[in-house]
Image 1 (cartoon, one colour):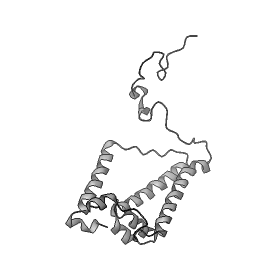
Image 2 (cartoon, rainbow, N blue to C red):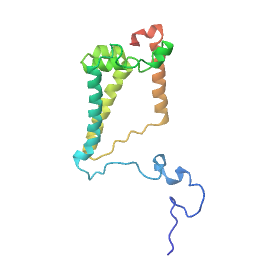
Image 3 (spheres, rainbow, N blue to C red):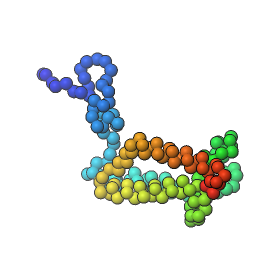
Image 4 (tube, helix red, strand yellow):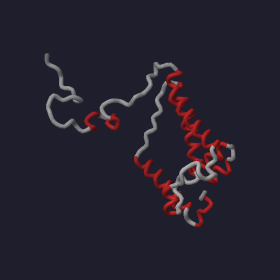
Length: 171
């Protein structure tokens, strides 16, 4: 029986073809990424976003109960311990503790970038739940320029919060 050659499993020996030979899904390899089928029940489609929310709620509950302002509960920031410089995450636990207690101004003062990140995550989570409820996948694909911009913002935030005029950004 004569079959047409399969581009994913060529009959010849040798290295496999470059991933771009597979078309637009090359970023994921030859197979599409796992997605919950649209025919799945609404409960099954909402399971992952709700489990994510439960994990985050658990983390915020723990940070809300165990005060990071008291020494000995959490390890210190390695960058701050070695250099005395604040990294982009410094003050994040104190900010999460303040946010868990409803103290938004203190949370903003402890780490403004983390505070903004919590809001962005909340918006994305709501979009995720709405799309999952409708049976649509949440695809957030960003071009490399977006990731470079995010890195530049993190670097700028780190530099400014360690300079005298940016002391208001320090925890």
